[in-house]
Amino acid sequence: MERFLLVRPRGGLNDTLVQLERTRRHAALYGRTLVVDLSQCGVRLPFDQVFAALKNFGCPVETFDENWAERLVDAITSAGSRRVTFDLRRDHHAGVLVHQSAGGGIASIGLLRRVALAPDLANAVVSRLAMLPGDHDAIHVRHTDIRTDAERLFANCGPMLESRDVLVCTDNADVQRNAAAHLPRAARVMHLSPVPDRAGAPLHEGLIDNPSEQAVSLFSDLIAMARARALIFAPLNKPGFRAQFSGFSILAEMLRIEPQVTNTLLSLADPSLLAQLPRSNRAPLSVRRRIAEADRWRWQFAARWQTLRLNLLQRYPGLAP
Image 1 (tube, rainbow, N blue to C red):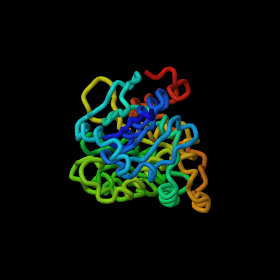
Image 2: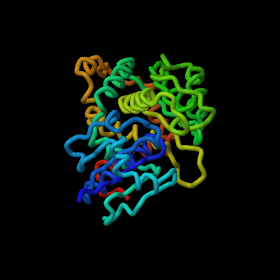
Image 3: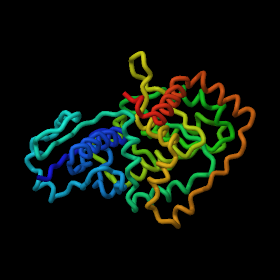
Image 4: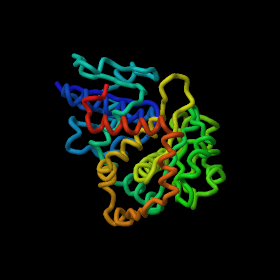
């Protein structure tokens, strides 16, 4: 009997990818077809308009639609809007399993190793990336429901970004509008997409007016950060001894460590568009920049340590918890 696993991720992009990867592993291990419904998360498009599964995906994957609704109606009705899941560590006798949950981590890179962006989305992302120079730095500022200290981050990285083209990626319209004023010594402060003013609400919650545009913006920012010479981010202002970071920042940093994953994500774009992507023209770093890079360990110690940890975990996956 054919068996199914219906996954309905919740949360932002990194949470979505983590939940897709967790259920992909389960479906691959226990012989299920993965049925993906993205209507509850920040990427509210049919799965096959976002990703194309590669040969190493590991299990059959289908996009949830009306036909699947008829086949899985009982499971969907029982899910409702609650958090629904099951023990992902073992097999189950039920013909249909439902996993509807948020939750982040570093498993997201596992999903991205097994997909490419769907052709139309890849074309739109590549067209936007072509707006960037061949050498840029990037800053990511999460500043909605959970926040980084944006002003302090800008003040700390100002000397490092002197005379540089800087891409600012954020989920907060005010941060985007004011970024240039905080980086007066940068050669240019750029953004790829205007950020809607959500009055402090995360971009993945509530009504999304244009899901296609949001998907292009998310993946454009993500890949642009991964292609930057330096990616600057900071811990979130959350209580606790251990520094916590935006999942989007960590995902971009993981892609920087594995650039071949980024190349594969864009591989289904039109070759003529890919040819327009700026080639790296990175000039040698100035002495002042090298000093500022060294000083970065002082004011960005937690993030730099996290990068070293990610390098180790990606090189030796068996170390992951």
